[in-house]
Amino acid sequence: MRIEYGLTDRFLTSHAGLVCLYGLLRSARLQSLFGPTLKTIPDAVIFTVQTVLLALGKTDFEAVTAFRDDVAFGHLLRLKRVPSAEILRQRLDGAPAKTDAALHEASLRLLEAHGEPLANAQGFVPLDIDTTPMDNSGTHREGVSYTYKGFCGYHPLLAYLGEQGYLLAAELRPGSQHPQNGFIPFFKQAIASARRLTDGCLLARMDASHDAEETRAACLDERVDFILRRNPRGQDPWSVWNALGEEKTHFASGPGYYTALIDEPRELSDGRIVRLITLITRRTAHGSQLLLAPEYELEALWTSLDLPVEEVFDLYHAHATCEQFHAELKSDIGLERFPSGKFKTNQHIFACAQLAFNVLRLLGELMKQHGPLPRRLRDLERTRFRLKTVIQTLLYHAAMLVHHARGWLLKLGRHTANSHWVLAVLRACPG
Image (tube, rainbow, N blue to C red; front, side, top):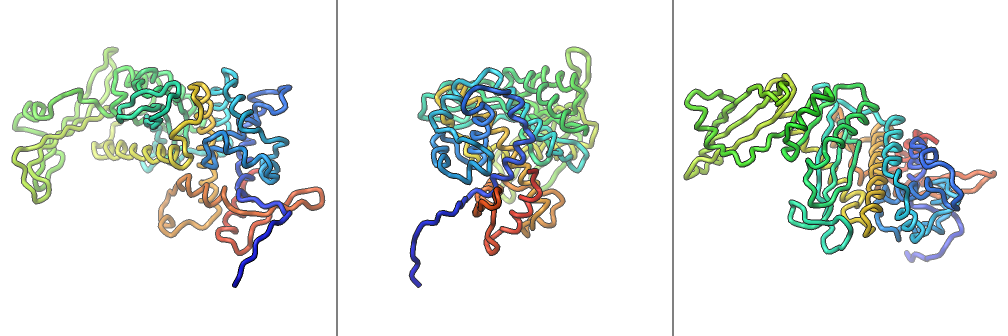
């Protein structure tokens, strides 16, 4: 059968989910944060458009050009005018100093209105703090420098809250900046933000890059439970093993390995006590392969928890989930390489990405509540949709926009895949 081609005057859109974005972004109240202005396009509109572009996985300024003549895009987001790529760039370059703080407050307002951080099985609300290098090699962007991964880029500091992984705080940093440099103010701000969102027991989890007495003291000052991986700092596991002597505390053993346990209190310089758990493994074989010489492995954690050793290590190993969150930020949203050569502008874009990340995460929660879960997830008590799934299933769903009786009607295809699911989510979103 031959297929003919043609054009229609009807308003079609491939982004029906923009209605949901608008409904949630209203809770952020950007207009009140940036205030009134005499500019043709208010600051609130500029940052709304930038956030929406990031939520669609578009990081270049030129991406907005495709939407300038798209009637559906403006109507679904209630925009009187869509800025050009040049205006978007100029306004972000000249954004006021309060921009990042205002966008952070907008993200918190959004989560206060719609997000409820879930606790884990042990009853703790996890607060995962970590860094991730972003590859911007081959560019001359301000702040790009050599990272520990062996390429040039940025090295942002991120904090995720709850089992869902809401992006609680995000700070863009030069690639060569050490994670502990300026960490304590960031940590205290993250704790204050977390307490606005939940009354649950917070559990801060950090890797060895933050192993410092000031970190442990800050956790105690803020009355937050913590698990912090210890940095061995060149300590020889073989020497530690031999220092234990013959009477070692058994933790685990099997064919070819034996793990000893050291569980002891340690005193900080101010007299307060924290717990240090150390596991030392002597391995003589890998499976059926015998080793010519034994291998020694050392793993140690600082913690304030009075729990069995197995539970403490299980809780810390769950910290690795934040690597998935990093991947979603860098690959699903696409914010690996930044569009501007100015560090300040990229900071503003990074703050918009925090807002976009949380909007997509909230939309994923709505999809979980109002639609059919995939078979592989139905039997799980807690599920979390990847941001890519939210973007492809919800935001990129096709629809027709109809102007009728002085109003607009968004029509979805009755026989299109996932239409009933998307329709249920659209109706559940705030108007």
